[in-house]
View 1 (tube, rainbow, N blue to C red):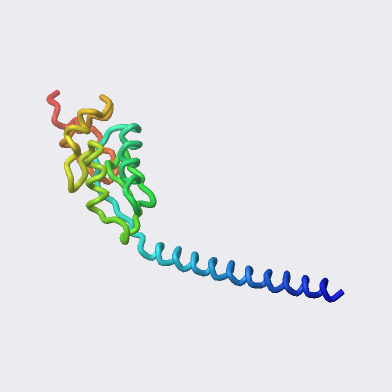
View 2: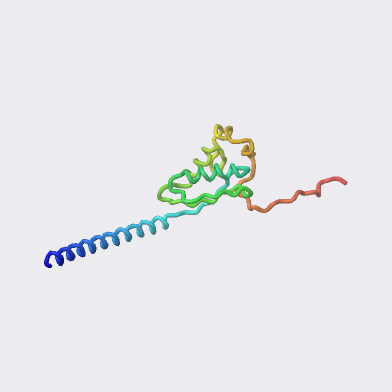
Length: 146
């Protein structure tokens, strides 16, 4: 009878110890997540491109930078919205990564070699306006002689 009680006491003591350790781990993880969220920065800047394939390449380049949480390129506005952890990367690293994939940004010209390797539909006009408002302009017919 004494052996059974002793075994139950040992099992109970071991069980309580492991529960306390699990609680500590949870608290540490929560603290880390909170500090990472506080370091997040949202940024928008212009990136030249034409189509859905451009979108895929541009976003892949931006998301490939360590610390980037999300990237969304708008084809019509020629603009990318990026959310990143400022303790792990910076704005110029993101610009350089996109430029290395062949696309011009507001601050860095795209790699000429990478540009040459882009599919035909992705060969954008190097003079196109970036970071547009998104408002479409209609053709001006007032200059035509009748």
